Length: 381
Image (cartoon, rainbow, N blue to C red; front, side, top):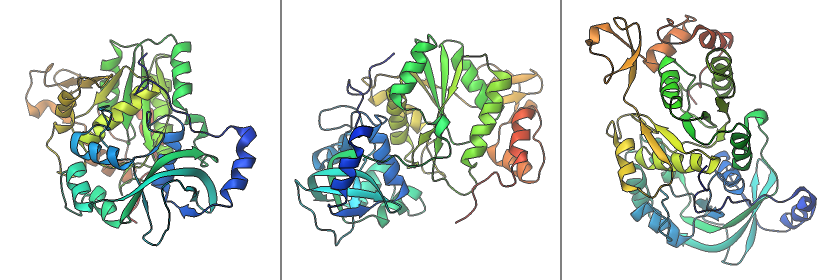
């Protein structure tokens, strides 16, 4: 099992016995109300998911991440995990402030520095575009003009309806050891599984001990599967089609940035912290629209020989009528007229109409779970 990124699993959670004292302190401090995405970042920092971060990026680290895709100490790190503040909020280095979410105390932050930043530079370097149709760029444009850097202490965990799936890195590492897994492949998803997903995972499983299925839970785009649908669909797939004790599912509460190649590296680091030795990287990992070249999310791994987790690259899988099974371009000699592609758009259209996709595209047990829901997809906001 790999060491956590940076060598140590971060823990910034306040012990239960000390929470009352910290809550009293928090009530006497300046308060910033933060949104759901930032609240999830706070939790992920505190729980060690974002190790080695102990808080939001300091100015030196911020510029290093943008320019070098590394922290100031040269450790690979590709996404700026930052806290923006309202323009009228007064704070100085050395202050401690309260981070509040939905009118409740979430955490304390120990401010080490406050700095201005260039939004255009942020968007261009992280997302590769200034186009406001990119959700990441649109979000940057809505941020405050200043960023705060400093360590956090989590006092109160956010409520989640999926607590049984919400394992911390310290817990997954223990679980993998208990199962005797020395090698584990991580699989990132924000979709209910079709046959292509299953075969990617099982192909990887042929040379590792277990698969760690880690769906992203949280804010999604319109048309994405709802969180509860993804989890129940995977439960059905694992129950009916996986060997016992070869698959674990746990959620990643995280707001996708859709940063393509940079986010692919970041996702690999997160799974390394959970205890994975390998990570599956798809054709357009963490992409959106046509903002990134098809295999950019795989090519970027060449820049990080010191990442500490092995990426597994797969071409697209599809069903071949002539072969009578799921194949890819390396294993099937037949033409496109024999192929049934795993089109997420087509599968969604069928499910929205109440139709079960053919078994060449999706397991019937999975389709039936999805069709049980009145509304399986995120709507327009």
